[in-house]
Image (cartoon, rainbow, N blue to C red):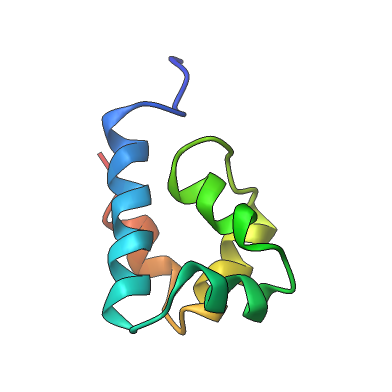
Length: 77
């Protein structure tokens, strides 16, 4: 299995998270505050510098008030 950090599918995943954040009118700082993390945490996962683990992903989707299943289903092959 090839690495997924820079794959087209991972890029779509990041684009969805960024698009959702912007559609909700939230800044990276506001999402970070909801997560109890520094703004750099959001910047790094949105920029593809770090991966989100499953628990972090669920926390991010909760902060964005969105269904994690919708995001994941759009990434299926």
